Image (tube, rainbow, N blue to C red; front, top):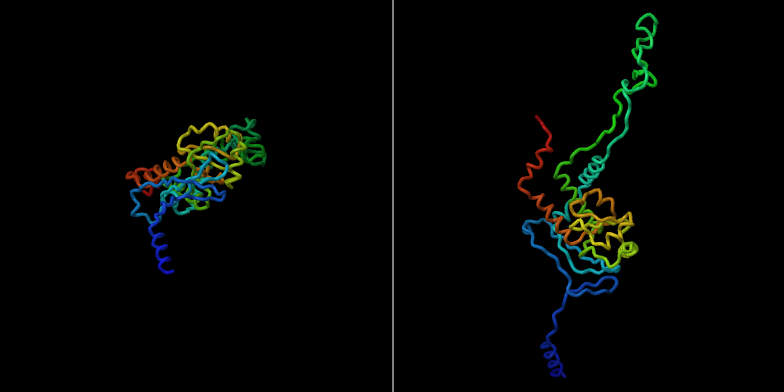
Length: 284
């Protein structure tokens, strides 16, 4: 009996099994073979204090979610410190530079009437006045009142804007509100397809789709045109206020790589002092 058992074990050891392929299984039991592992080599990988972040690469061509693979993201862009103060500075800056106050008051020179002296300078026993449209009089002009149009534009320092973008992207990723898709092509131009997709994946209610180029695919452009809480934006228009205004941020893989490339360049550029110099306070 022992010899038979030993022969069976020796035969089993000689059997060669086919190599296992990496696959992902999600809640709807859909299996994707040969997934895309999107990883690039960073120049500063040896000096990173944090590991690069890995995000699922999703699809848009079906309502059901399919995970096509993994995308590796740079931690300096997508895992930065959540600086709420810098995010608030960016939001306030964006709200202030588009605000023009039209509050307007008239001075004593613009108010109608009051061309003559109301009474003689002396002899009446009353206080001396030169016009009934003086700011001292009811119905007169206003001294130091608001004059329209009054812009509230100012410029935020360059690296405060860069830090605002990295902090907002990192917060979105940490809160699971940042998703990366392979492309923005969808099979239908009906708005109901986008609404059903958002409801199925719990992306809502407001979603911002970002692509690397400003000419978007036709179907998603038509589908989102009638939905006010779903918007499209190219990479060069991405800003802190728009990311916070929408609950979910959806980037294409090309857009995520382009954001990485641009922000890493500005974080490590050699002429950074030249950019910061105009925003320094004059202490002399």
